[in-house]
Image 1 (cartoon, helix red, strand yellow):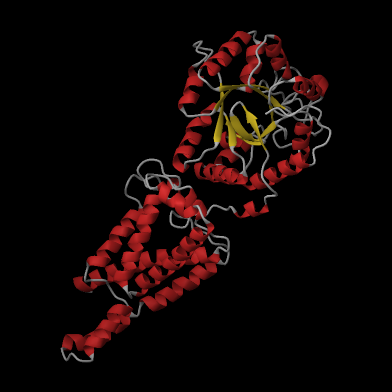
Image 2 (image 1 turned 90 degrees about the vertical axis):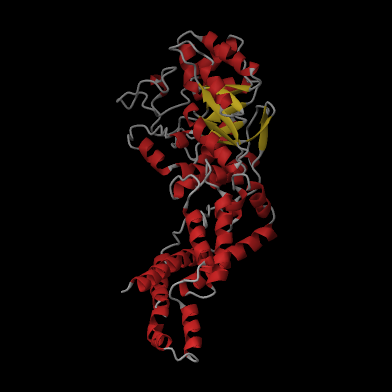
Length: 501
């Protein structure tokens, strides 16, 4: 093969490859019955995000965008693959790629950058757009039906031997047809097991279960903040499994909850009405990045702890505020240990510092004795966060063997003693404390880290005085947990404590 023919072949392969990308993306969307560009548009980031959010604002506009996107991709892909209307297809392809590029521009944080790697400025959309620009301005566009038609029309009137000889080259221009057929058949068989395409041009978050929502999630208030009665917990995001003696569970959680999966879960939770997340301090960078990348308005409660080694009680409070959190809460096990070690003065100083910064101050605990002690010392937070679950489940060790402040402490091999298996050590004592509390109470560990069914755990917490519940949720649990909360609150009986917040 001479150099000119090799060049034409390479050009053809590149053009067909780009065409196949467009075509496959278009047909993949078409095969997804519930596919919509709304989530992609609504969560666009960057300096052009306002335009994309406007496109996502109305159902009619989204329907138009979906139609143009799906059938535009298909038509552009067919034209490029077969080599017809190449200039028109290249122009339309460049326009689509530019729109994809600026929806999540790779100029820093990009929400879905992890799908194809993290890039700065140059990504696949950028490269494909420049290749299409070359096809737009170049005279050489490779083999294809368009070139075959052109050769055929010239050969009818031209007696030049080179042109006549080109008839024998005609089959080269038809080669894309059987190739398209073979690739199409392979793709059909592949997608019959489920569409797998996932890229910046076709990203589809599975929001279909939102159709199963039973209504709006009830809201309450903590300070000036309107908070959903169901708050997302941060343990599953951070990989804290509390899995008794299952040593692999934390690693499994982290492997499942990749950065992309965390983003998808939070976006789904917000769509379902969960407007707040309570996180451990190490998760602050991830959530700050999520909010910056998506423009999310989710409220963030950050747990903080003092630096006792350096006697710096405020450093993590200030760091959390710098991350842009909405509410600051002293971490539960830290309060337990400070009270246990007769350092209630540190709790008081931290509470005062949080309030001096103008923030709502929360106080958490696993052992109710810690909150009783702070109450007796005159330390009343803006809200309490307390473990609230019954102990009627198999792995709860006997109450007579429970020791105050043992949560997050030493684990015992003896099944009759603590082994990361009981977080509300004295349920009756907890209920008694909550009943007299005059500030909002957020119950957490209401499912005893997965040992109690949601309906049972949610009902027990709300019935016994919780104003809010904080629950760790995987993405596949979000809608179910929201519906359970709605059902429980709608049918709640036996609650005697008035609602705070």
